[in-house]
Image (tube, rainbow, N blue to C red):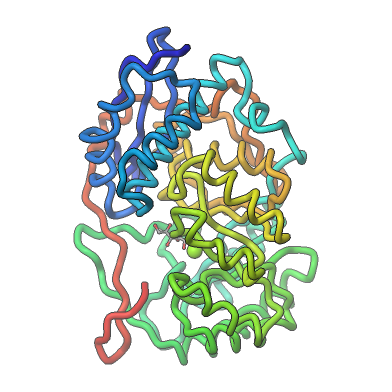
Amino acid sequence: MAEIEAARVIVTSPGRNFVTLEVRTKDGVTGLGDATLNGRELSVASYLGDHVIPCLIGRDAHRIEDIWQYLYKGAYWRRGPVTMTAIAAVDMALWDIKGKVAGLPVYQLLGGASREGCMVYGHANGADIEATIEAALDYREQGYKAIRLQSGVPGLASTYGVSKDRYFYEPADADLPSENLWSTEKYLRSVPPLFEAGREALGWDVHLLHDVHHRLTPIEAGRLGRDLEPYRPFWLEDATPAENQEAFRLIRRHTTTPLAVGEIFNSVHDCRQLIQEQLIDYVRATVVHAGGITHLRRIAALADLYQVRTGCHGATDLSPVSMAAALHFGLSVPNFGIQEYMRHTPETDAVFPHAYRFQDGMMHPGDTPGLGVGIDETLAAKHPYKRAYLPVNRLQDGTLFNW
Ligand code: GCO
Ligand code: MG
């Protein structure tokens, strides 16, 4: 028995907002869990503080599955991003504790390493094709085996995935949502030339990826997938808003470009049909927003039956605690595909010292017992919460669209 004596929420903003749960046992062992939900951070902090922490005190931290079921079934109100992020934070913290008590890195508790490391993809973005390709060449130079290409769209002032900074992409940068403008026609014309230039400059020995960010209809997505086929993309991500899982049947009828979806999924039920009908190739559900390591393993186990592989979300709004958990998961799971890696700023890394490392395009969670991430609370206290929203997106006639 490792009795939970206390738990608390730490909110800090070293460059961006992060919500972290710390669970402590009577023996003084602590575990960390990420509870960050971009743009809605304080809702998860309050869900944890007001409704979850009181139920944890006195429970056995080793009973991870039972506590997961208790929080999921016990709330009566199942699923949803706030609930599932809160459950995920508890789940990560309990795996961290179990690892520390056992003296083993979490991946060893999950069955051990299934591979030497996790292949990651980096983000090349730029205002135009030339700048994006230049950034991509830089990533290849650093050893990346997989690179996501996102470029500004001619005629549009701003678009998803393109930042002012070459290395650090941070969309949640405004006190109230900023407004972007969108044109599907302009966008659809811009992506094939980007991939043509990408193959020309980078050759064929590097994987190229692209994120549509939920902006197309199924038939538009089918056309884009088909137009990109000659350049053999690794995947086309979030082609349409995936609330409508059947929509992917229509995309599949028109293209053999591999499809990835799921960074906003929070439960296996959000992707059950996509997986069982083999409508996707990669599932992007992630530790922090899909109920923790415990629930993500269930999603991966279902996906494995249908040759669907993992491709977890790993943007900067997922804290280093999530990144570590994703790497322990990715190293151990049989059907790992790829892991997104958007580097955190040095400020973030300083608040969350961690054991995971990047080498030759691969990442490894390290062998520190538990998840291998700490929090420097003195430094964290110097970065108070700062409200920050993701942008909204409008068509050129003013219609509110998908961001
Ligand atoms: C990605 C994502 C992110 C999200 C962000 C939202 O593929 O990395 O689309 O850029 O937009 O994580 O909080
Ligand atoms: Mg995405």
